[in-house]
Image (cartoon, rainbow, N blue to C red; front, top):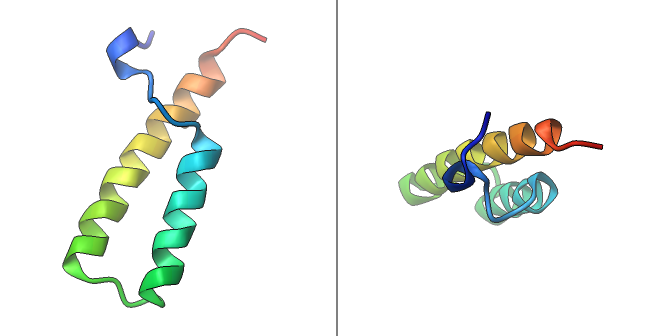
Length: 57
């Protein structure tokens, strides 16, 4: 079960949009800083997907 500290502040959809925008801005050739931000966003996105899947209907 997820603890309150593990519940992401942003939704999976919002994070997905942020990831897509990052790739568009980098034109498929991300800088080291872009790659680091991408990795952070993907980890947060995965947490959001899990949290949303575990929410009662």
